[in-house]
Length: 202
Image 1: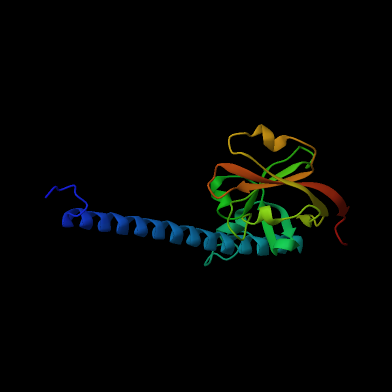
Image 2: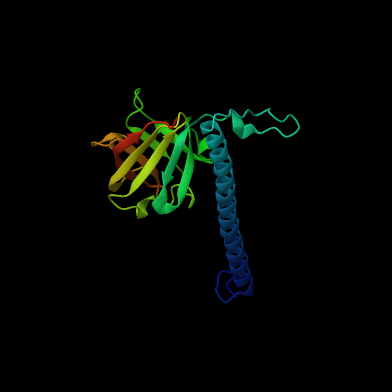
């Protein structure tokens, strides 16, 4: 019998083994992604609590409790992004890095005067995974650590190639939120314009 024949028992056994390996690899990847998303959700929730403490005038530090140190308390937080239509309230880390993106969304860049903010986030479901479902006219808020609240309105949703950074700056807008699409080849952008600012409450 031809050893490469599909009717050969050895060939069938090899196919079963290869198929099982592929299924196990896919399962491992899925479980890994779910675990990473769960960790990110917990970390961003903890960072949000820290940001709210700072809004209340507190200043938590990593070594406040020497027996139970809190490394997340050492992260700089630029503000809190609230997207009511998605049920999201997320701390925005002031420093962008791949490591920080696994914790929460990050300030990618902004002008020296704080305008034209660009905020990046992974496409985790409870981070920026549902950005594309927003509609034009949707309102969201950005709260700075000094308590200043700026309202923004969605003016457009688009996609750009992942290797086209110039497209990120194109057009007129006051804030841009962006994330990757599912196959990582493109970037989903949400453009927003400022719709008013409220001073910190006394």
